Amino acid sequence: MDDRREYWWVSYDSRIQPAEVDFVGGIPVSFRFIGMGGTITAISAELIERLPAPPVPVIRPSAPQPTAAQPQRRGSWLWFIGILLLILVAQCSGPLFDLIK
Image (cartoon, rainbow, N blue to C red; front, top):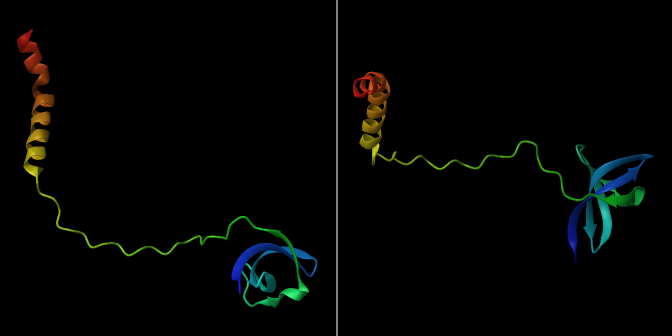
């Protein structure tokens, strides 16, 4: 049998609300209004239109973060020397340019 859960606009007690509808063999069996608890038999409601996609939770559970590996040290001295060189050039570029002129 085909058991599935779909999301539909449902008319119940002269109100139209989105609901989660359980189907068994293509026949609606029960529904639950989204955001409310408890299920109601499908005989007492009327399906109006299928919703395009199921609602997603606003706050998604976060995936476990992998443990941080040891930081990469390769090339760190090269970066350090490069930044020192940039600072030196920035500090001395004015006087050096004046000497070259």
